[in-house]
Length: 278
Image (cartoon, rainbow, N blue to C red):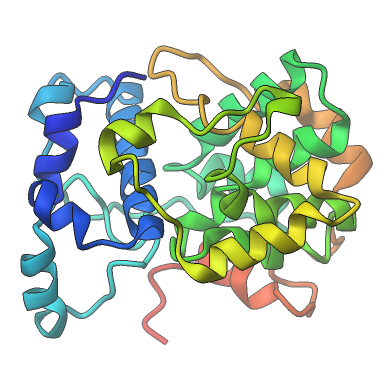
């Protein structure tokens, strides 16, 4: 997917406003910008045009609006639509929902992207655990976007191999750092959008240094390799090729996700019932 540099920077309030954002915030803004384009193209929106996207508020406008809103900007796609339209009534979940039910009925804004990522990983001959991590790595953004790698790992930890949750947790930090051994270079797109002096915040740097020495480093790295370029608005994707992989590596609770009384059941219930007032 091609990104118009001026359009994106204008959406942040211009180069000066973008320069006041830390590197993590700029990267998250870029990913949100790309997902918005992908989803508008997917739905056949005739207004979808990279040069005519709705403007993001400036940094100053965001700060001025903090005390006027009933939500924080880090809230997920399911709760605050980026289209400006009213939310729609969601279809009911089955009594014992499975991961497939969540993909079909709740992961509507993130599914296309993660399915593309998983398809790319499968095409590249990745191990099944990496393919599964790619399939799951961003869906937590339906409820929260800030530090989504950590939140995503927490959501899936009880149900997947430890290596999968590790890869999900740390893919977020590794995207800033090149690794020639797998052909991953710091993206030119980041240089164009954020400048040559783009520096991640200290906690991301510290996380990278720790993960770089870990035996499972490459598992997280391979998620970034198959994630960054997985935005194609023309792609037709399906979860069907991953049914067997999910069956082998995802521990589906018999009570249904959200009903198993586990440490993250409340997160699944939040995704299942986003319109509950309490």
